Image 1 (cartoon, rainbow, N blue to C red):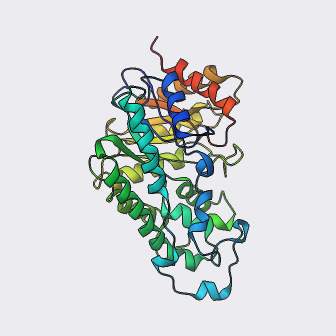
Image 2: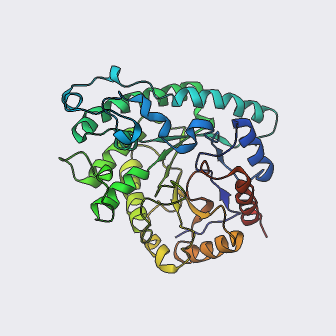
Image 3: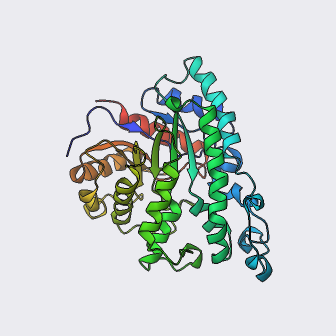
Length: 352
């Protein structure tokens, strides 16, 4: 296995508590002028809570009651078309933010090698997250996929592929795998497709999405255990589920599109070898796909020291760790706490 050479990189997962895109971008690049290869727009405002802003995309008559929906037997029996699903808005947000990114790049505030990173959910995540009835989920997933791919195509028309990175966020894929293992009981994490084994179903969906990303556009995956209230939907026993999913993605997606990176979270208290042991079976094609570990946490009194211990244990198992990150987006973190995260990133990535 090759060993990572050079200083560690920093990956930003997506969301932030900043008020504007320019505020986020300038703050990050001032603290980390050389350590980032990609930058999202900070997913400010309504987007700071992952997909919560997407539920109005669906008719209220099929949305889960916990999101204010009013599902009924009549709505469950209806046949839906793509006209029933509103445009996602991801393209409008990305194109607007890229203009600010490009201005900062043109004035030297963002280094020339940095790509603009657009983070997208999978249709599975959005549909499973908001739609009540399982049969309706199965019916509208391809319709929402059509809308999301329309947004992706428009993003790639507006932003040069050499300046763009697409990140697919995978919390629901992880949750469904944990549900299948019997570690989650909430029915909203149950797979709604009944005719396919889970892993092949996930693999085919991700490969289908990857086929719509231009070859020159970078593509990565954020493997996620959630962060609502800084709590996972279930605590990972170890990295086994993440490694299994990553290997599945590499096997099935790489023939369609190169994978630039994988990100995996590390819970705050986990710095034991048992947690990292499954990395022994991680297959990222000899380092062609970079691995970023979410070892940095806000409100961590041990901060840099704990993150260094995690990295030391992880690298004893998997030497090719390319960089560091938080566990999830920072959108649910207080802005004043983000400063500590950035300082920890800087301390861990400056060469000795």
